[in-house]
Amino acid sequence: MMYIGIDLGTSGVKAVLVDKTQTVVTARTEGLTVSRPHPGWSEQNPEDWWQAVLRCFAALRTAEPDAFAKVRGIGLSGQQHGAVLLDEDGQVLRPCILWNDQRAGAECAEIERRFPRSREVCANIAMPGFTAPKLLWVARHEPEIFAATRHVLLPKAWVRYRLTGDMIEDMSDASGTLWLDVGARRWSDEALAACDLTEATMPTLCEGTDPAGHVTPALASEWGWKTPPVLAGSAGDNAAGAVGIGAIIPGSAFLSLGTSGVLWVTTDRLRTGTRSAIHAFCHAIPATWHQMGVTLSAAASLAWWARVTGMEETALLAELPERIEHPSEAIFLPYLSGERTPYNDPEIRGGFLGLSQDTTRAALTQAVLEGVAFSFRDALDGLRESGSALTEADVIGGGSRSPHWVRILSSVLDLPLHRLKHGERGGSFGAARLARMAVTGEAPATVCGAPERIETVLPDPVLRDAYAAILPRYRALYPAVRGLVAKETADAEA
Image (cartoon, rainbow, N blue to C red; front, side, top):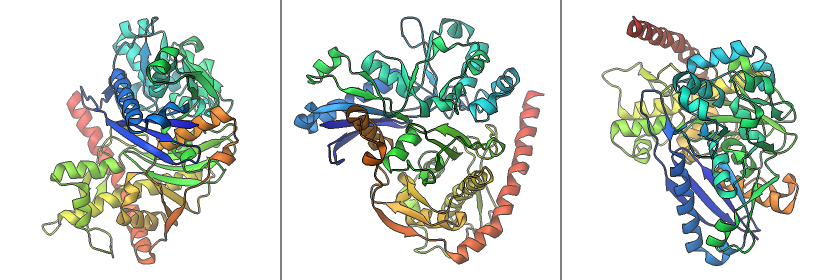
């Protein structure tokens, strides 16, 4: 039997074809673009996702036709929080408002005013990136769209709908809506009512390892499958990544250096940390939860710096000394898209400080890596404050390829970090594992082994102490910059 894992990311759709030995037989990635019609807005056309999925499937079939014909299960991993609004005929009403869209700041306070128990029930602070504030924004600013809305789906649930005709969502992705009772693993009537919605608008809930629909007979015939493959309940992107590296046991932790950054720890019960804007979600594995601190611009910060300089990221990193001996003279604040942990501030913006006539491009590149690392330190301290004790972590994502960045992170966090042999597989591989469990009924512990660790990076004592001395200065800059942003906003509104 063969399995397909599809990861619907912000910048692209990736699909992998995986065999029964968990070997990736072939893979394909199709790019996506983001529309930004106004500052702070971020949207995509769901039809673009579907066309990218179709191109991925075609490429897998062309590359491995015999293996493709043996597919029995499909798993989905998806960017979380996006709002796909459908009318009574299942047609998309407007572009999807994405996870990093910041327009719904005012609606967050309104939700918590309407539903004072929101943080207790939904286990998270209302944030503009979550789905619920987006719906309240639509109700206020696009009332005709809201009035026509009959179904609300997250991005990967919409892809499932196109594949199967079923509206189903897993617990991990549903946790990021601000409509789920995260402890009870069910939709909250009170949370939905705060947005003038009911459970009838929501997809059916399931666990990530559950079978949840089949590919329609028409699509199965088109793709040469005699038996329509099973769709797994699947997972949000971070939960799928956790499944992919075996982070399913309470206490297992990883740091993801993707477009955004995540510091994750698996838990055996719901443990909240709303004071520090720590997320508390259901895992894709039944009876399991997780916490995570999130920084919105991790690898995105280095990508931004590469665009500004007109250089490739690899070329920028090549300018760094072979071994970094001391912190950069500059400090970088990585708040390019606002920040989640620990500030929950969509308005804050980033910048460089401490520049001089002697500041070099390499020093600024190093400052970017360090600024992101300091943001992860904020996440680590928030997790510890909420009761999660991290003593080590695996590091995954595209940024894990940089030895410089991993060494800086280890020293700033004062944690051993483990680089993995397959640390860049991401959510698509985890989605394929979920597909297998949905088909075979195997236990997660049987399927979700951990990949080989190829290197353990320990904190450098000299750098660790130097970064510890800088950390208070980094944190002191947030309120100063926050004051400037607030003044600019007030001046603009005057």
